[in-house]
Image (tube, rainbow, N blue to C red; front, side, top):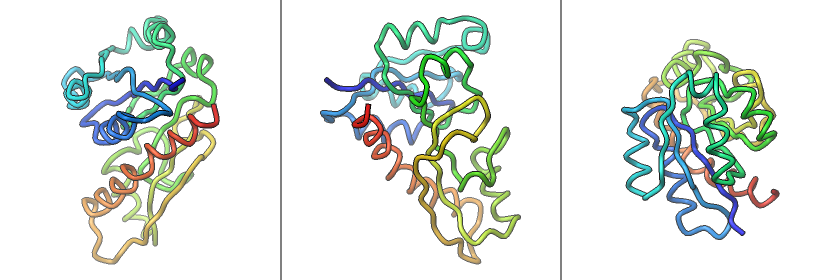
Length: 190
């Protein structure tokens, strides 16, 4: 029986799209829901393109009710993938899905993680710190931003001419390549 995946995203959703593409014909898993805290997020259009239902929520619904949790449970979701989701995951989801919520971070944790460290903010910090390499980290989610157990890291050498945009492009290539594969490997162990 296929495992059921829910994706949380706040923005464009390029990682979400790669996950949806990867699992479209998979025997291991399927994406059954895309959730967003942003009614204008392009990820909602991407979900619609794949004929995957979506759900938009606000802070009240996520943090002060069990509506999102009950929706995931009604759909028998096995695994949650955070694909550019910027809010902290509430305790009720963490308790219901222990080691079943994955996040992708655009740097090599534990460096350059935590609140406010997302997107170009991360790449700018990496360049300002004169790091020799950067990459991605895929990790389980716990109660603290970017501190859950690391599942996978991939890296690349930073070239002297690299800009924030170049780092963002290189990181995104790694994300698109590895996030769906890591999700599949986790599903196979469930």
